[in-house]
Length: 179
Image (spheres, rainbow, N blue to C red):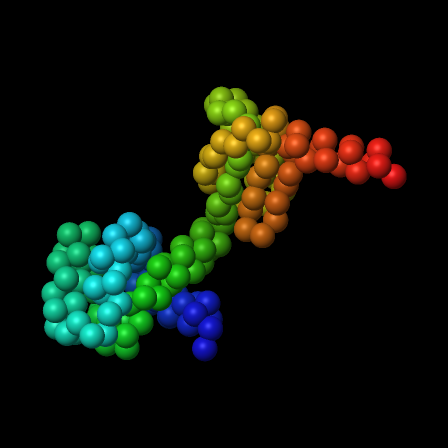
């Protein structure tokens, strides 16, 4: 089974439970925190994902992490289930899938905006409004800078890329002149 479909199946299950109980955002936050901890600490990831380490020892570590983030009982039970089935390595992908489902349900979408220079508030508002009009959803933006763009902006929503960079325009002009 592919890890993407496995993560999606687990995410759908926890999404349904969270929706039913009205704790979807809290579940997403808890799983995101655990996934982030595993991503930041390779030692933690190796410890939790290693079946050679006693399950009881890994459970103690998980329980301490869950207590620290103030996890709901549903999140605790879900993470324990992943541990029992040796699926903790899939937690970051499950969290990502769950976040996408939560965003879709709320009518929000995440966009990555890359510009040559830092954007001021007015520019950011303009870009946000344009992306909301294009997507038909509320847009949250993550900003990045890349001086190689020379100017303009590249926005990415899901798999769709809107390239308004000077670099892309120059490349298109070069191709046009080469014909």
